[in-house]
Image 1 (spheres, rainbow, N blue to C red):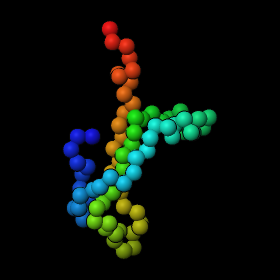
Image 2 (cartoon, rainbow, N blue to C red; image 1 turned 90 degrees about the vertical axis):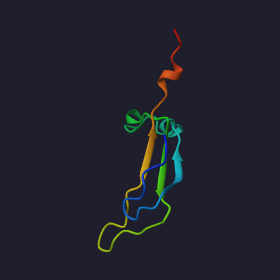
Image 3 (cartoon, rainbow, N blue to C red; image 1 turned 30 degrees about the vertical axis):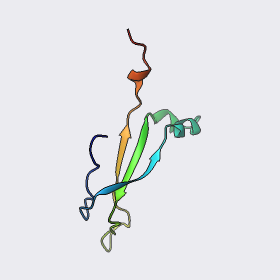
Image 4 (cartoon, rainbow, N blue to C red; image 1 turned 180 degrees about the horizontal axis):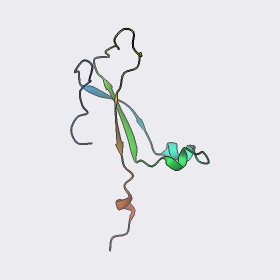
Length: 80
């Protein structure tokens, strides 16, 4: 990811790194239908630094930002 993640859509505050999902998750899900559909290098999740709340009478969940780094297949291929 180049630069910063987009600001929070609700309050405009910067987003900060919250957690990362490693590709080892795919191996842990081996044998499931989901494992065959996953292909990523890493997923980084960013949340609002202002900890803003959703408006009343709506879902308590707010959309955050996830950056998905693709699997670096080119790095694994032999150089000609």
